Amino acid sequence: MRLQGRITRWDDERGFGFVSWHGDGSSAFVHIKAFPNGVRRPVVGDVISYVVAKGRDGKPRAEQVRFSDRSGVKKQRPDRVRISRFLSVVR
Image 1: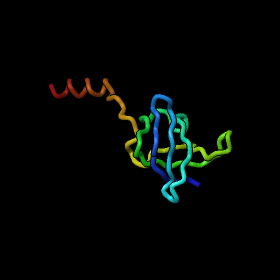
Image 2 (image 1 turned 30 degrees about the vertical axis):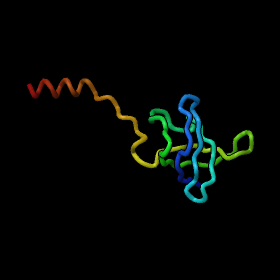
Image 3 (image 1 turned 90 degrees about the vertical axis):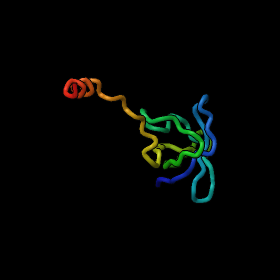
Image 4 (image 1 turned 90 degrees about the horizontal axis):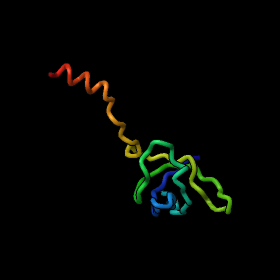
């Protein structure tokens, strides 16, 4: 079952932090590797959805993390071919 929570602590240099579940405020460890490739790095306050798993230490760990809004999607660089074609038509 997916839960929704908010990043409450994040150490970007070390690539991990904690997420608090909206239900009862319980927290779970979250690592940058739990986020899909190609998304921006999380910051405190981000709302995410995740699946809870047990870490090696037996404590809750957030896995299969997704940003709950579109803010997690990295903006892709524009296709240079399309831009050059557009500019040649406009000129």
